[in-house]
Length: 197
Image (tube, rainbow, N blue to C red; front, side, top):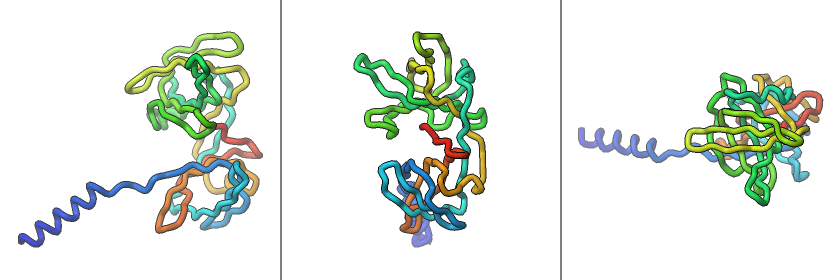
């Protein structure tokens, strides 16, 4: 009985310390795709082959009217800090309601060197010269971000693998599974539209 208890304890201890494999983001275009793998040409020009996860999630990114940025919406915005600390949006993703709360918070982002990502609820939108400002509130803070006229404003909708064709512009979330780089989530544009985030 003592042996069983120790074995169970060891099993629970291992589970408690097990961490999911870290993920990475790749941005680029699809060179080739088949039922089990995908070849991505990254924005730096390098080519990478990834396995496709059995439970691969595919989303389509769609352009959206900037008027969709409204109080109460949950958004994600990549932004660059100015010399005065003011954040200027590089893009705004208006999440579908079903995705409210995704990645909530403010953190560094890898779109450009020094960029940030804020996923939060819009509490106010106000006109400004050559754009608008939006106030975003998340669980432990608040940011006011300037949204310049003309930046991409997009949303997402669920899609399937038929969206994954050579030439499609994509953002791939990859993870090491069974010793192989594996695509676990792909956000893709249609007809050459590039996910801006």
